[in-house]
Length: 457
Image 1: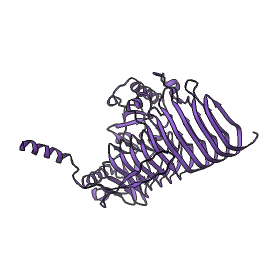
Image 2: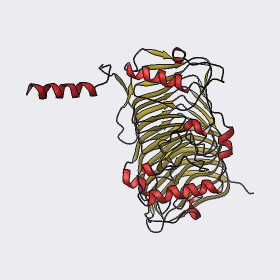
Image 3: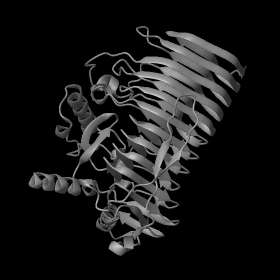
Image 4: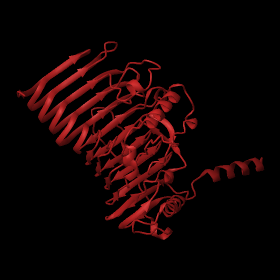
């Protein structure tokens, strides 16, 4: 009996963190038109691990990947704290996080990431447009971590020469997308979806946090990105605030929250080559397998300087999306759509309880659009393995002003499962250039106090 007790005690001891200290958290209460539980943020220990202590050299010519990794490891083993990136330019390859680590960029610090694809191997488990696979490591990557942060007033600035070449979609890249789609559609295990080979050219994310909890992104700048800029994938709980994001390359979404829950995005500026704030929930069979909705997300007090959409829902929505609230945001220049809900007949899933309120905008093609047949390049690239129609119900827009729009709202539901209950209230557009509204296969549309002026072309 004593031997058994000793064995159990040793087993328990070896699984505990080395620091064996009590973790502390603060909570943030967030108001929303749905039940929103408090968001927890980790209180990082007052310990600092400057990357220079581990051999990092400034100047932009010495690769500091190993030095930064050593600093992160030391920080993690000690129980957590800040890994400090001082003022100056610091060249690096991929940065892989561990739990309880805050990567802190001091003012004037620039993390300059190499653009050599070989630097981002071996491949890691990630995703490409809603399909899980092994691909080039994201430039900043965390997987199955808790309490991870990037903070400070410094800048993330990847070198872009190679990635710009990869922005194009040559035939080998399209073939790779077809291969990945086919594997996901036929339940090939994720470990066998190795995509970082040959001329596949599946670009890595800038920031990809995968299956993490208690995330903090605060204060820093982003200047360009190979692919999606900030991707929070299957994450639970966190805050992104006071970010200055600018990336105008191909697929340069600002922030994508995918199959994640309990997040606050506030006081950020987005200047994007694609959608600005995007809510996603995986693609087709992969998302049906994971069965994790994207839910309980609030976006407030943000400025979108440029982007395809102010708030985009989809088109990867197969796990379901609900309880999203964007309010008190501005789009002073031009976006294609202020509020865009998009899916197609392959997705399934659901979209419900999506709210936009108190928005001021410059110009847009559409103030609100729902489109149930958005397939982009996939339309002719791959077949429909299985048809599943998305249930869309409860879309709310209130108190929106827009200087100019081609149209106020265009609702294109599906005849097999019409969109239900759309409310458009207190919307004013100074100049409508093409038409006010078009509605098909949509039930229970409520439009109140929608004012506008038609201008002739």
